[in-house]
Image (cartoon, rainbow, N blue to C red):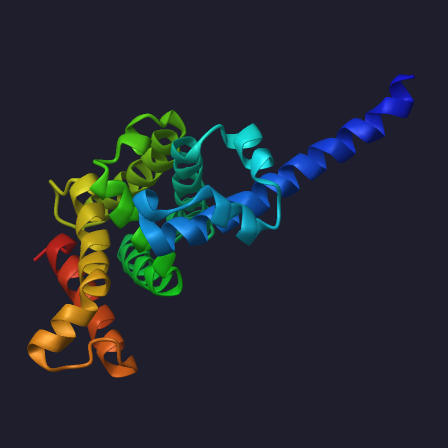
Length: 216
């Protein structure tokens, strides 16, 4: 009896995981385009090609679904960062790679920025309620702190650098530029999203961050 029902259970679990993945992808695109306030569950169901009742079954309501989308978004960027194996690199190279990765990730995933914009409009209450989000992000700061300490010990970095403040600066240098690229381009009369401008921006960010952490 157990042997007969086990494959069915496994198949159902796979179907549930598959359905939730499809829903989250559809919801991500909907929230990124319309924000939490403008997103509609009917459109998410249409994007997913699934019955709307199934969305409510797995995620209860739009607020919980938005929280799940944010958690997934953070999970993805943290998983991609983990692949960099920064602790295997020399401290200076590790910090440079993190700056480069952050910039290139934001460029490749503009939906991540728009999701953060929407979350901040709602004072990040969905993330404040998410223990999972905090657990996913804390290891990054611990890792960066370890890299900074290694750099301090080998003489390449100065001491007293707060890893959280440093990461906020790395993310902020990319985030502000890309989130405001259209207004900045219009105001200053330069295409800040041209290939040349993006390369110049990355070089500038690396110089700024490394200039701050390197020992004089």
